[in-house]
Length: 278
Image: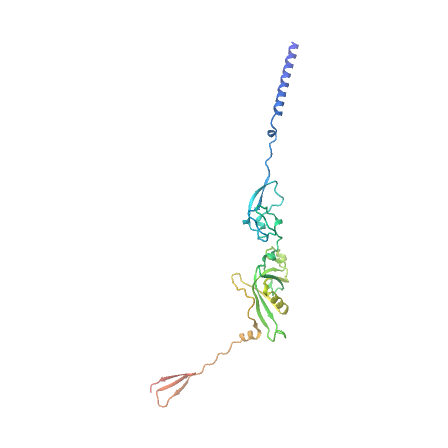
């Protein structure tokens, strides 16, 4: 009995060993692709130029289209809305990816200047700069006052030297840039104007020989851009303040003819004949 039990136990153990070996062989023959499935390729969105663009062009969102590129996303994402308005410093081929290296460093003063204009700085104080309430982007007239002297003559004069010019900077405030309100409240000692190129020399001469004052142009007012206006002299201003006395009109003279009913009436150089009853 003991021998039969031992044989039975041996057969059971042998069967278990065969089953374990067969399972191990089946697991070892599975394809490696099933054992480790490949991870999905990583990609990110970029903006590319849809057409070639020449250097010096102003970047616009209409020049760009989105594309998917393989690989991890860069640490700094490029937002075309934030770069819109910047200047391309080199030629760009179609399909090139947008990056800040293609763009010139922002220069608000240069970007705000129209062709034919120059940025010219003037000394100002609180009074000449509209009480300190001047902002960049405002349009102003430049008024020039010249006191009487040996060179200018015996009469003091004032004139509008420039009309409707743009304020590019006022103190630390620069056009197109956000300025801290606390820094802006500091008293500004200079202002930068966009002056027509042909008037820069006249403005420089006026600042050195007389005094300048700025007058803000209203938002709804359309002013013709003129280099200058007719000067007003002090004696002419005094003459305008004294209204001329009215010229007395001559009283009519009556001339009666002897024994008649006809009367001649004179009104200055005119004569009328009036018939009266006897």
